Every structure is written in C-alpha cells, then in structure tokens.
Image (tube, rainbow over all chains, first blue to last red; front, top):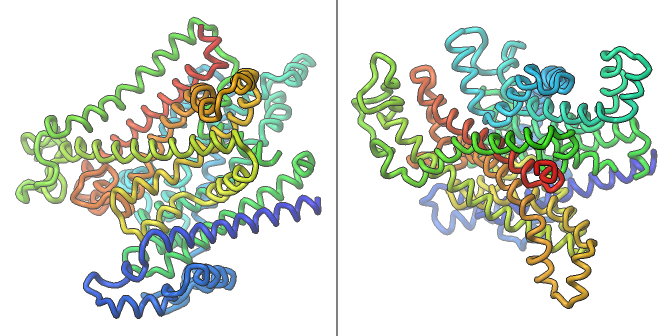
Length: 305
Length: 310
C-alpha cells in the first residue's frame, strides 16, 4: 500500500505540474495580457510599463520559473479591482463552490442510482424506457438553460424558491438541480449498463438457482459487483462538477470561485482569473488523487497494477 | 488497472463505442429494424437544423439583426398581444426570435462542425501515429492526454479566451483543443491492438511503406469509430459553444447564436419567457438528435454488433 501511495502522489505531482504549465502556456501564448488589461487608447509607454510591472518583458523561461514559484507559494499577484492578494480572494470563495458541487453530487447520486437499478431490473419495460428517456434528455440539456428554466418556472411563476444568492438551504436547491442533472443522467446510464453486465454472469445464475429471492440477488450480489465503475465515475465527476459550477454560479449569482473568475475576465482583473482557474484545476487534481487512494484501500487488486 | 477501470467507466458514461457488445443483443430481425428507426428518427431535428443553417437567408422571415423598437418584447403568435409575422415573438430590441433562431443555427452548427473536424483530424492522426510507433513520443503524448483530462475543459477555455479575447476563430480553436484528446486516446488504443494483426504484418512483409499501412490498412478499419465519436462530439461542442457564448466568452452580439441569445434573454426572462425558451429547445433537440444518432451509428457500425444484425 505504501508503494502504491508513493506512486500515486508522485503521479499527481506530475499532473499538477502539467496543469500549472498548461495554464501558463494558455495565458501567455494566446495573447498579450498587458494589451488586454489596458484600455484600447493606451500609449506604447504605458503598455511597456505594465509589461515591466507584470514581468512580461523577461525571457519566457524566467517568466515560467517565476510563475511556478508563485503557484507553489500561492502568490498570483494583487487583484487590480479589490487591492488584495488574488489567491486570498479565490480561497474565500472556494467553500461556496465546494458546497454547491457537493450538493449537486449528492442529489445526482440519490436520483441516478435508483433510476439506473430500476432500468436494469425492468429492462425493456416502461420503467426502463422512462428512466432512460430522462437520461438521454438530461444529457442533451445545457446546464445554463436548465437553470434559466428553473428560475422561470419555480422562482418566478410559482414563487417557491429564491432566484439567486447564497444563504439558507432553499438557495441551494435550484443550483444543485441545475448542476447535478447532467451528471445524474450519465450516472443512471452507467449504473444500468454496469448492472446488466453483471446480471448476465454465472454467479448471478448460481445465486438464483440456489433459491435466493430476486431482491437479495440484485441488492446483495449483483449491485456490489456492479459498483466499481459507478463509484469511479462518482469520484471523477466531483471534479468535473467544479468546472460546471462556473456556469451555474453565474446564473444563480452564487458567490463562488467560478463566478469570480468569469467576472474578473470582463473587468480585466487578470491575476484573479489566473488564481481562480488554477485553484479549481488543482482541486480537481487533488480530488482525483483522493479517489485513487480510496480505491487502493478498497480493492487490493488495483494496488498491484 | 486503476486507469483501465477509469477509462471504461468514462467511456460507458459518455456512451462511446467499445462497450456496445456488453449488453446481450435482441434477436437479429427486430434489432435491424430497430436500428434503422433509431437512426432515422433522430436525424429529423439534425436535418432541420442543417437546412436552417444552409438556407437561412431565404427561409428566415426577416433580418435577424435589425429590430423595430415599436415591436419590442412581443409574445409568440398564440398569445393575445402577438404581432403578425413574428410567430415566436420578438426580443428586447424588437428583433424576430424565429429569424435569430434560424441564423443562430448557421453560427452554432458551423462552429461545432469546424471544431469537431479539426479536433477529430488532429486527434486521430496523433492517435494513429503514436499507437503505431509507440516509444518515447507515445509516452509524452499519453502524459499530455492525462494532463488535459485532469483539467475541467471550461477552465482551460476561460484561461485562453481571457487573454485572446472572444471571437469565432478563437472559439473554434479552443473547442478543437477540447475535442482532440478523446479521438487521440481511443484511436491510439485501437491501433495498438490492430498493428499486431496478421494483415498488417502481411502488408509490411509485402513491402508496404508506413504511410500506406497507416492510411490504407489501419485508417479504414477505425474510420467507423471516428465517425461515431465525431457525431457525439458535434453535440457536445454545440453545448460547449453555447455555454461559452452564454458566459459572454463566445459569439459576440449582434451575431445571432443560440448561446449568446440566451445570455441576453436570461436578463429579462421575467418579462419575456419566449426569448429564453426557444433557443434552449433548439439546442436540446438538436443535441438529443445527434446523441441518439451516435448511439444508433455505434450499434450499426461496431463490427461486433453488426454481425448480429445481419
């Protein structure tokens, strides 16, 4: 287990380095930040001065080293707009984003697992058709549109829930549904496929042949074996939800990292964009490591790959 | 092991080929007919969107960008205050919602198709070469794929667009960067096993050069998988493009696009539900059509299931 742990941590550090590098490349090669940050009528001298302040006049490899050093120390410079360290601003918002992603995850799991199981058990019948219709429609619906429709129907027409902001649990419901539906759809499909696959195997036939009740066959024997890919997807998706949170936060004015990053693009608050993107991406990497370690602890076969 | 479990979980969730044969098939005759229906039916919304995109100048009732201020926020035809000749109502600037929907199809489809084509071509080529040669380049590319997969795509797009500025060419490139990984990973995996087959060895023994083996022998074998993947990708990219446009990072006004129209509409959804409803329905049914087409194509083209349909 120790060897596995070391290997995984090493791999994660490598990926994290890659992610930081990728952000550096994306930010430096896609244009001139100084030109983006200053108004269109800025003089050449003003541009040069800002480049010097940001360190953009130095050779690229030195910039990269400085960027890496900053990322390690959590130093991304000061926010132009808030006159505070960008990293601190982002960290303040991180709990809100994690809360939203976690709520969406729980909601998706609670809805998708029963749907997937139902669809597999009643394969080809009405329950299956209904559950899978929900799943394919859910996969085709853009997050943000679902959010707008929920606001329109549930908040504006019916007046049941608040339209935006964060506070009570009532504020959390619509954003969590918005963010969780897409994931619930793919999870339901995967649960169905995975369970159907297991139900065709010999040990299930044996369990039935020895006279076990069908409920017990499914819940105690089949489900346990169908769980591995399902649990993997759940672990992986938590990170993906962090990306989806960017959109959901914008619709519901949820005070998280994603909304902050998007708003900062429009006011050209470049250090905050940089810090926001990196913090979310590295949280994603860290969560993946957690899932991998959990796996190694649960299933010894994975450890000795 | 961990990676293979993870890969299979991901491919099943996104309904990518390879796992189609795991579910026991229905009897051949029923299956053949069902596949044909499953393919033709979802083609209807997709075909409609293509017609709208191609023929926009001729079928759109009025110009999508000129509005009449007197005709602001008129509801669709079936409501009392509707305006004649504006079947789906008008938006905040008095522009015709239907006309914008039709022109929006052109922008959204064009971006999605171009981005998919670039991503699929680049990804497949990279997968083909790395899977065939293996070695050091392969290891580097595999790591690169790992890193990009460890990164929520929307964030990468935000990082690039924050600096490059939002425009349609930037959008196409960014979306293509999001698409190449899937193709590279799956094509590489297929080529790794195909290159050991007897017919490839035979071709090499007969003196065929590498390009010939790659493009005449291996590529045709995996083309069907690429087509299926690309079908799913077009749908995925339509959603991504509209998402970025919704955030204000994609198509810019006054160019009509489903996503950027929804951005405007969200602001005054209380006064005019129709402006926020129709573009979303358009995205949903087109993507639904593409996803179902992808499912059906996969069942039809996957050699393992095809045998059973005959």
